[in-house]
Length: 271
Image (cartoon, rainbow, N blue to C red; front, side, top):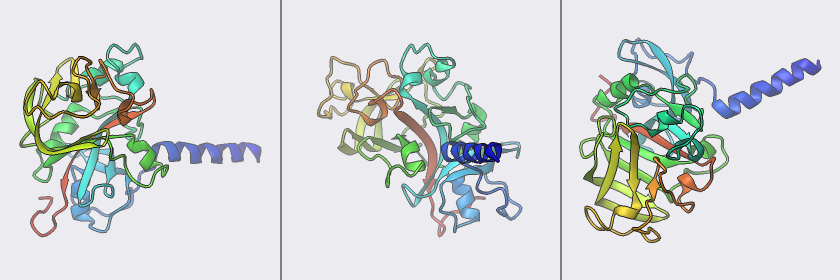
């Protein structure tokens, strides 16, 4: 009896931490969705966040974490999540190198556990499949989404958040520095809409937004609290970071990267 109780408690803990697959019995009407947004087009009534089955370019099934709620009518598929401990530049933690690479590098990790928030990365092939479908139009970066996913907060963190469309900046193929127009960036509660900002990525440099460099490059917008002489990497590649930024406040703080788009049933389909 005691052993059964222990097993039951372990089951609850594991599923609370990593989630359970929510759509193993859901009908896909003979279709094979390549993203969470395509699931929404097949089953418009789906609104529960969690782990779902989607399909790669060869129609092989795999698990993905879907966010249907936090930015509705946007629907998002998680492609990467990592904490500051493993994301800090030069980290000696095992497999830290995977979280110091652009999305042009194939560096999957915990791919079968997409809600392993402290260290998860999707394969390059699956990222590109999601990126290539006609309903994928945007990407975003969030902080500590795991707290929202585990019902520890009522809303996602909105003091540090970044969203852009893939026409202005396609992170899946980016491996250079450039000035890009962003739909929306907010750092420590300071927001800018349709502003030009510097964005970095290379084969050995995780995509990152440097709030400390916006006064030197591009549109010259200054984020209050950012010091130009100190490199503040936000949402990844923590060669330098601010503990006032939610993604890097603590070693266990997470940055979460997503691909998605608007759910527009009147104008789009998954086909």
